[in-house]
Length: 219
Ligand code: B1M
Image (cartoon, rainbow, N blue to C red; front, side):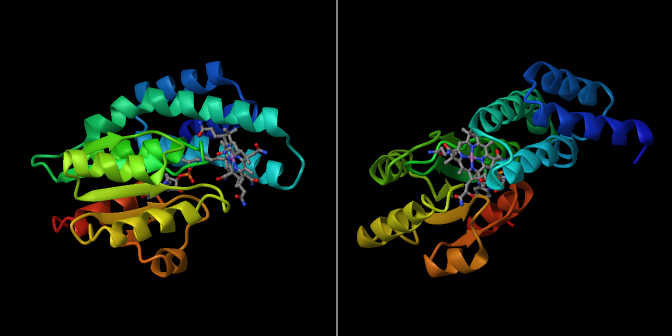
């Protein structure tokens, strides 16, 4: 990695730590002009900053306003990079229909949106329902558009249980394996996914695409 790009990644992380959306969007734009791969800008730059603030918050050394500002700066930067991620898509065929949502009680959206962008770039028809979505709405939408896959994001240990509720509801209605479920989000482990009988999990957006392709039989 060139020194210039290394410096850019550090500035990106710092812009999130500072909660500065003006700088984070400026740096996102600069990375595009420099030809930095957009996913690298996110994972090697901005995510380092948001994880730092998350850890500080968890340790009681940063407070809610800082978390909110970091989240906003992160969201703004990712929004600048989204069209670039979509351009990377080499999709030639339709891979299938996916419903994506963050579960009820949870408003974390950045990772879920990133997963949606990567799935779209890979040829999936993505219906992103947004955050704080109850089970009945998610299942209703999946039936309405005849989705093959539901992707559920949860970032809180208190909301990850909602993933299980949705899977149980689908099973109760005999809607699986017609509709498969993939789960993700920072607290989600393989053990959890197995325990709740999800069809799979992935720890990042690139893995989510590979998993989704596998689940719809197009890997
Ligand atoms: Co919140 N928050 N937050 N937060 N927040 C966490 C999750 C936390 C770990 C911070 C901490 O304490 N260390 C902690 C949870 C602790 C726990 O549950 N044990 C926490 C808390 C406590 C809270 C509040 C309760 C704080 C409060 O109010 N007291 C509150 C909850 C609100 C609610 O949801 N009801 C809250 C609020 C917020 C903000 C709104 C301020 C903001 C979100 C802004 C937004 O989304 N618009 C925020 C943020 C920014 C974070 C951290 C710092 C960063 C999350 C993020 O965007 N990461 C987070 C700490 C952390 O995770 N390091 C934290 C970047 C993103 C690219 O990664 O979302 O992990 P991620 O997504 C990844 C993978 O997980 C995966 O791929 C993505 C891309 O690689 N993935 C999937 C995600 N979804 C997937 C789905 C898939 C597959 C893969 O298939 C379907």
